[in-house]
Length: 152
Image: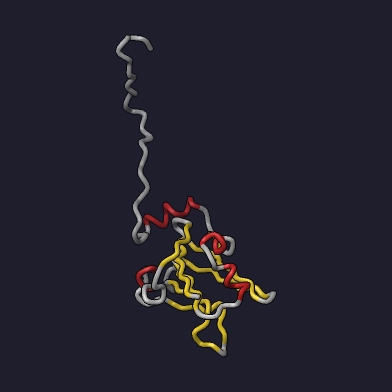
């Protein structure tokens, strides 16, 4: 199994990506992403489930990820974008949880409300646009359109 997912708490999305190990810095917007092992097989060093994330993204929107294996649940909270990496001979119960974006969605909880995103955008969110402003001013009278027949 070689599956890589980008988890983005700003857009509240999960996207399957390729080359998650090689692109972790790019995908997490971090020069030196941290790697947190959620599950590993001591007898097979190439079999693991890991999360890569920006260790300096503590103030950004976050997500909680939990995986169950053998009756135990592993839970992590990650600030900013994260990459979930499942590689090698992953146990069936974990493999089922990470098999698709839909099954992985059941193991993800996006934290915080969308109302906090405006403040985060002002703080310099990477790859993000500020929300469009709507005019709240009533200084300008509204123009009414009339159809060509003169009826209202």
